[in-house]
Each structure stands twice: as C-alpha cells, then as structure tokens.
Amino acid sequence: MKALVYCHGSRGDVQPYLALAHALNRAGHSATLVAPRLFAPFAAAYDVEFAGLDDWSLTLWHRPEVRKLRWTSDRRTPETERQRAALKQEAVDRYPIILKDMWEAAADGADIIIHSQASREQIAQIAEKLGIPNVFAVLYPNFVVSRRYPAFGRLSDVFSDQVDESGADPYSYIPPQLITMIEHWRSETLGLPPRDGFLDFRYRADGSATPVLHIFSPHVITPAADWPDTVHTAGFWHLPAAPDWQPPAELVRFLEAGEKPVFVGFGSTLSPDPQATARIVLEGVRASGQRAVVVEGWGGIQVTDYADDILTVKDVPYAWLLPRVRAVVHAGGPGTYNDALRAGIPQVICPFETNQRMWGEHLNRLGVAPPPVMQRDLTPEGLAADIRHAVTDPGIAAVAARFGALLGAEDGLGAAVRVLEKVHAEGVRGR
Image 1 (cartoon, rainbow, N blue to C red):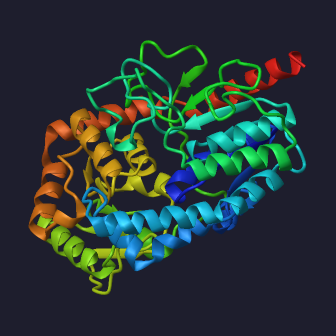
Image 2: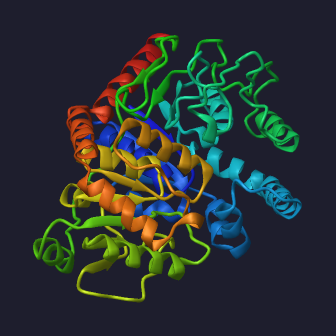
C-alpha cells in the first residue's frame, strides 16, 4: 500500500503524522510524509520519504509582530484586528504556491491519502482526481458532527457546554478568495468537473462518508455516542526516538546525578521575550526546590544563566526523556500532554494561546495538572507553587499514574494502520 500522509503546522502538529508514516513503513507499506520543507531532516531521521510544502506560514512566526499577536491571542483591539487582516491577505496571496506543492507531492500517485485538518478541503480534491480513498486524521473531536462537541467551531471551544449544530457549516471559515482559488485549481489544474458540495470534506465524491481517525485516546477525550462507525478513536500516535539517536552524555550524567528533575519546555511556541521567559522559569524552578531539564525548542525559552541544578538542551525526544523526569512544565500542546500522560507524570500548563489554555483546563479537569496559568500572567512565585503542587499532591500523582497505565496499554498506531489497510482493501474491491 502506497500512502501519502499530508500535514502542516509546527513540530507538534507534524510529529504524529510522521509517527504514522514510520509505522506504515514498519508494517511493510510505503509512506511519504508531505509537510513543510523545514521538516525534511526530521523525516530523514526515521528513513521516511518526504515531499516538501511551502513553509512560509512557519517562518512568519519569527516576526516580532506575529509573536506579539500570539501572545495576546484572546485580546482583540482595532490594531490587532488590522494586523490579523493583513496576515490573512498575505496568506491568500501565498495560497497558489501551497496548492501547487500539494498536487506535485501526488505526482507519482498513491493508493491512499491520510491528511490533517490543515489541508482537508484541498486533499479531498486530489483524492478524487486520483480515484483513491482519503482518510481524515485529526487531533480534535469537533470535526465530526455530534451532540457532545461543537462541530467546526473554534478549537478553543472544543469542550464548550453550548452545542448547537443547527447551523454547523464545515467550511464557513474559508475566505471567499480561497474558495474561488480552490474552484479554479480543481477545474484548471486537476481537470475535475464542477460538483455541488465539493468542499465538504466529510463526504467523498461518491457520497460516502470520509473515514476519520481520531489521534487521541478515548480515555482522554470521551467519544461521542452518536459518532458513526466510520469514526475511529483508538489512541494517540506516539513517535519513538529516532533509530540512530543517542542521548547526550551531559544529559545522562545530569539525570543520574540526583533526584528526578522536572522537565520544562514550550516546544515550537515562540515567546515575545524568550530571555524574560527563561528568567521566570529558572527562578520558579529554583524556588520550587527542584532540579530541571530545560528544552529550548524553537524559541519559547532562551537560557543565559547556567547552573548545576538546571541543564539546558536544544532538543531531545520526549518519548525518551519524559519517563525519566517527575513532572512536565509545558505550553499545553497535544503532543507534549499526550507524551506526559503516557509517561504517567504530573503536568503544569503555561499556555501562550487560547487553544493551549483549553487543553490545560481539560487536563486540570482530568486531575493530572493544576489550573493553567497563561504565559503573560506567569510569575516565578506562581510557577514555583504550581510545580510544588504537581510534584507533592498524591491525588495528582495517582491520577497521572492511572493514565500512564491506560495509555501505555494502547496501540494507537497499530490500530490506525489496521484501519487504513481495511479502507484500502475496500477501495480496491470497489474499483
């Protein structure tokens, strides 16, 4: 089975899809990861074939004004609205390049396409052109209409109690300019005829439902009772350390030199002032009485004050590190919180954005973390108190350990591979 795995976003957005491509290859299939070009080395470390997409949307996060917008994502003023409108127009102008890259990645054909929410409308057209099945794989539960989750709403509202599907529209958020571009691309580049509802990713061209793979555990996000049997929820897609990766000797010595440290890392989320964030983190960790491994990531933390009780590293596989620490301080991304849940350790969530805060609130309700504190409200004293709470509260420890056992018993990747094999076999029989 030849599979194309499309995704877009930061490392945390891409990593589960790389895990799937790696798992497909290990199961004897041939998978190509289609992702922003800067992730080519990431795929190469797992010997996964790679096709690059335009990565403009990732490089723009390094702009100071965009960092500031992310920092104040839930505060809207006339100026921030003007800046957001300018960025949206820039994205519209860049869109033809994205469409070109997506189609070129499929030039050699495939037997099945798996794709994230970031490319759901476009990939449905490519699958229709190739005459192959597409499977929608998503980290959130609100892309399938149900009475439990507010479908197609803002990601920060996933767990809202106010569910009204009377006006649910799966593509109401798409700017009219992009709809026009997709229509033109569908006709002129793909050579497909006009079709009513062609943007509705929930259905294939023949009217059958698009299969959905939920990239989360049913123990973490409860499946809706009214989801159809084309929706599969069997566990998160955890990526192991790369086959040739070895831990730095300095990291091994630090871990062996004393009690388990806490982990601090904000992944690919960029702070407006990484050095100021680092000062808060270091003072908070020291005030909590803990040692720490700080992972700088893409720029959330920039450490300049080094000490024996804190080790700073650029990058390290979480699957290897988290079972060796006693708690995790992070921004609230799905990849990190799922790895922490599987490791069975407490968490402290310090979100930059509202969707990260939503996950932090959910983890607090599950009982594995104190209430989240937004980065802009973070203080050394508050962080120290939350770390102490996380590492000394026996209730949090017990719940975290229970989730570790539950998620450790799951095989989300194996289940996903079996679903894809079945979808492919059904597609072959239907030709």
